[in-house]
Amino acid sequence: MNQTFDITRTSRKMIAPFLENYTLEQLNAIPDGFSNNLIWNIAHIVVTQQLLVYKLSGLPTKVSDEMIEKFRKGTKPEHIVTQAEVDEIKSLLFATIDQTEVDFENKIFKNFDEYPTSTGFVLKSAKDAMIFNNFHEGLHLGILMSIRKFV
Image (cartoon, rainbow, N blue to C red; front, side, top):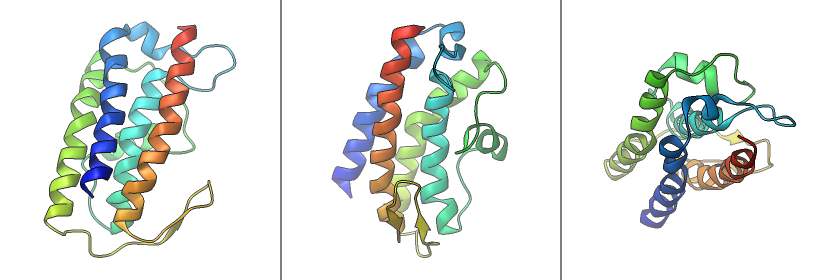
């Protein structure tokens, strides 16, 4: 699993500068032709990892239910994200992965509700979920790179 977490951290290191180098207005802007914005994609990445690994394992997530409701699959930006929310997302970007790694080391992921993803992969374990999460983050990193050209 070490390599899986190394890949996740590399992904997050590529995502983190978006939170540093773009204004609140740019993070919230939805360019023509897009259905979401930079900050939605970043928060969605954080939320999805928690849902895939923790929720499907029957464990509590490390993010709030409110955050999940705003940024889970099937949602879209419906409010202007505040600087306080950006700061929270920034703090969760690496903290959630660090905690997940500790939880894997402590073998807390004992149960898992098998989950067929919309891309056709069937996740059968928390390990599968973490591996798939890297694919998911790569997709959204590509979207972030596209949106940044227009904000």
